[in-house]
Amino acid sequence: MEHYFTNNESLESKIKEINYSILDKKFSLFTDLGVFSKDKVDFGTDLLLRTYLNNHSESLKVLDVGCGYGVIGLVVESITNSKVDMIDINKRSVHLTKMNIKKMKSNNNVFYSDAYSEVNDKYDVVITNPPIRVGNGKLFEILIDAKKHLNKEGELWYVIRKDQGGLTIMKKLESIYNVEIKEKKKGYIIFCAKNK
Image 1: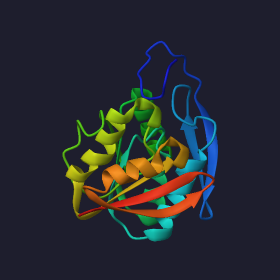
Image 2: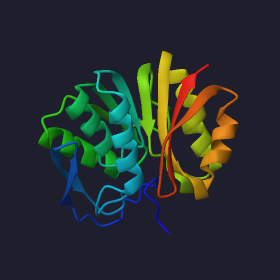
Image 3: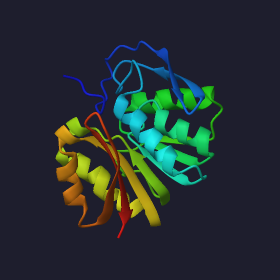
């Protein structure tokens, strides 16, 4: 079974556009086969975005990890005027995000990276809807190693469903972050983890 965090060069391409609305702003985004939530912005991403934007309206330096076709980074940039870097291990996702950046005349930057392998900068915020199905090793690499790329007062924002171990993962992260639950809805939990 192909997952959206693999690069299958033989997977056919069927690029289409989807629409997404948030805070009275409308977005039209290119998606394709082989990327996460290709038919519509998923509930977890939407809740993460709404909760984040309810807490941050200011312009910050942001890293969107596992950006998919770019919805989180593009919405955050558009609404808060933040400077956003976006990364993904899936080359098709990076290509789609480049298309969406061009379409929206965005100043965001996107590049291929396996977790933080190609990331050299530090950020005010790391934000992610992490790929749970990739396994705990990669999941914890994304969540724990975010610390190395956060400024002193930086924050890691992420969404994990309760039935996917959200609270257990929170406990494991509490040794290195101050973790706070910001929102809970339909089994999804939005977390904000701050450097200790």
